[in-house]
Length: 81
Image 1: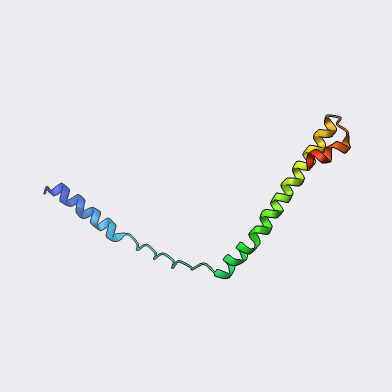
Image 2 (image 1 turned 180 degrees about the vertical axis):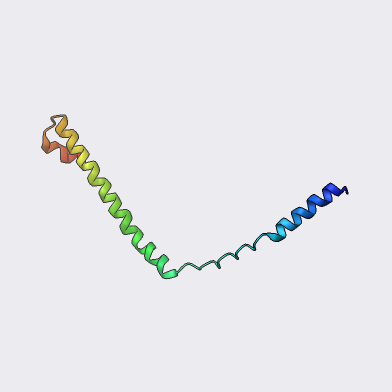
């Protein structure tokens, strides 16, 4: 091995040795089963609420479109349903 290569390798070894130690990774926290159960219990209600909000938004859009089209207003709720 040439002197230049040896000097370069030794310099690299010193540089690595001079680095501060990396902190150890934090221990993985296990998931709280009660928290997971609470989320899963609330999920169907959240989905249903989201569905109802979307349904109401579509109903409002249909009513607005009916008004814009000069459709008889009594026909619009039937179309929005």
